[in-house]
Image (tube, helix red, strand yellow):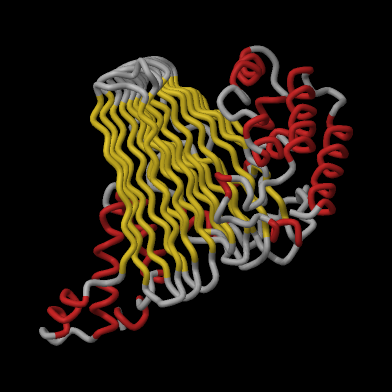
Amino acid sequence: MTEAGLQHYLDLAERFQAERAAGAPAWLRTLRQEGIAQLARQGFPTSKHEDWKYTNVGPIAGHAFTPVRTVHESGVEAAVARLALPGTGPRLVFVDGWFVRELSRLDGGIAGLSVHSLRDALVKDGELLETLEASVGRRARAEQHPFVALNAALLEEGALVRVAPGTVCAEPVQLLFLTRGDNHVAMASPRVIVLAGDNSELTLVESYVGAAPGVSFTNAVTEVALGAGAKVTHVKLQSESETAFHIGSLHVEQGRDSRFASHLISLGGALARNEVSATFAAQGGECILNGLYVGHGSQHLDHWTNLDHAHPRCTSRELYKGVLDDTSRGTFHGKVLVRPDAQQTDSRQSNRNLLLSEAAMADARPQLEILADDVKCAHGATVGRLDEQALFYLRARGIPRAEAEWLLTHAFASEVVGAVPLAALRAQVEELLGRKLPGAKEGRA
């Protein structure tokens, strides 16, 4: 990224800090200032940085992205109606990064569940502010990531989700982030905080969707803390405009005997990078990471995961799949670290890529760093094309080639889609895939 591009964001953050300093708690002013300082120190990553070897974030500097303060609801109601999950669970709607109360449902009628917009929580006194002070930035550290630093520097909006110990949430919590496009080059910097108490259960859905075509930049950070025995399922659907930019990071800390499952579906963006960093902070935990990315045109879809087995008797399973057509490029960089005391670790990691054109590219870098001796660990990656024998088998039974290709591609993707826990959300994903998978129109004509 050019110096001019970096300076734009530093100047933006300094103005933001000055405008919002009055009335902000001291810890928030400090967090924002530290974000600015860390961004200035680190700069934005280049291909010389190992974790960003295959991804050039320079195009973000080509646009003077800024937060859009005025929220216009027109044109997004239909998108909300289309994407809203059935049931009575809480739903928070954000347009270009700003919470829209009129389109949201805060009261889901679930005892022990508290859902607030982050901005609302910041203007309240007492427990909410204490919760935020103790939680924001604890897992997503600005000194470790330039885009986390940028998010901290512009921190104002997002969501705070708290589940009391022993609470089982039968209804999912949905956070719906819509970008309007309209060529106004909006920037959104949401921060989501999820605190799941001991032996609680929660399903959280984050949907990032373009309500209209256009150029935008979403820089999202989610922090999740699971207490002992807690179970959290996190689903992220990223289907923004294919001229948009999306950087998203998920940071998870797991307590004793907790279970965390992540399901990522990445379809949109000219450049989209999704990161997951999970740490076993106590023994006996289980972590499942599933991901599907589908690219066409010149899309670049990047994925980075880090699983830190810091305690013994923990289990992790990771499966990421990519479907790439035209000149699109998909990258996967996954690391599993097993620390010296993390005996009886059980970890498996797999990345599989399907290339549907000669010009499509896939980069796969699965990694294991094992510092303990009583472990079961495996990893692998594949890059290939559709099975010609399977195509011949289908065509020999009268199925046209385009439809046969669609069927095989859909079957490849269905392993990840089928693991999404909510039927209504799976239907949304299937409908998006029906338009996005290469050959879909021909295959279903």
